[in-house]
Length: 239
Image 1 (cartoon, rainbow, N blue to C red):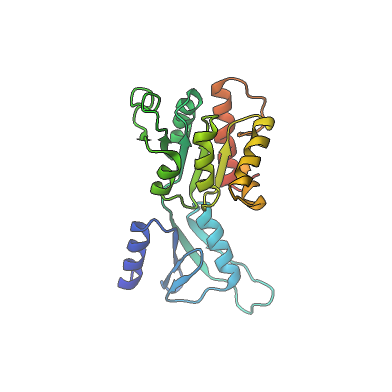
Image 2: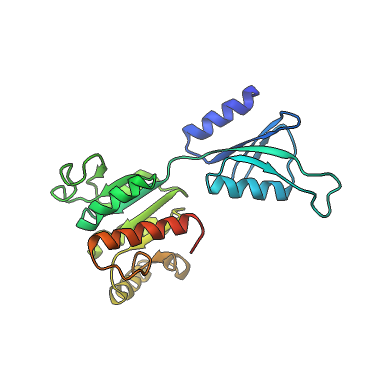
């Protein structure tokens, strides 16, 4: 590996920027493919880059072989794509009972979990062992956590004073999923409040509410299952 490739790769990992290290198996030449840029030693066509970036989004490392493509004289290259992504994260606003179950399920699904709740009596180590806890006000906490495109945000407090500030930040961030607990009636009132605070119709449409897939969930555990399932579906572009 050339030094400049290694240095840029290490910097991307330090900065938590998704990048794919792409090796041409015929020549040994390498390139770094970012979501919006390419750096490296060999040319890649648009259809190659589209496939590489799709694999990067889905964390799919491995061999990619391109058959003959109409409009191109030569057979496509054989590439090994190594996806380097920052960890998937789930930020849960509200240290409620559902959150206790959801955080455990998210951890099993490979998410680094953070619970945000200024009420320290709720967001305690005893109730959330091993989970990162933040006791700041939700909007301040989410700003400090620096939401990226591999972050999901779920608000569960059912309290506008806590959920709304978090949603204001999350809906203007690159988060791949934003969900909020509450009935259809509660959500309608929420939309009115957020609209009054300046969120656009496009931003408001990003909210998954009532949160979770419609599986008829009733108990806290079932609701947690529906939420993590919806997060995974959003992550895998299955919604």
